[in-house]
Length: 164
Image 1 (tube, rainbow, N blue to C red):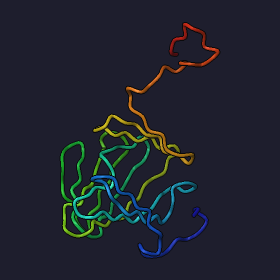
Image 2 (image 1 turned 90 degrees about the vertical axis):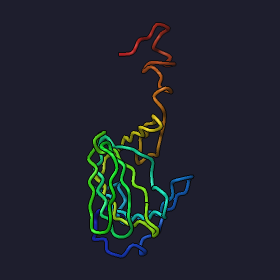
Image 3 (image 1 turned 180 degrees about the horizontal axis):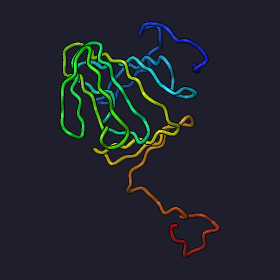
């Protein structure tokens, strides 16, 4: 879907993409995708006791959650706080916007997720020391310990190559 027209519909008018891995589980009803647009819009649904994503922050993306139903606990750089229906939370780019939301209620946590767009999006995961590049070409993740020198294994770099 591109930005060429008006998009209208309820949550269930948009197919859900689901994911489940240990403590992480969600259904994401993508209303407007990020590629080719300036804003991604999704309805998110997290079951009780689960989180959608690990604790993370984006270099270029602002995320905004508008809570519709349920109770969530947001973890941020300054600690934790609860959110409920009618509340909004804005996560700016950078470490000051690091976040994770967990459903602490007994009903599904439902919210609208509004994200600005950057291609690529560079995302950092402080708890696991990972970095991910998310782009229209795919996703690549690594840890700093896996890093190699810029000229490493380049055939024309010579044997005494140093980083520039």
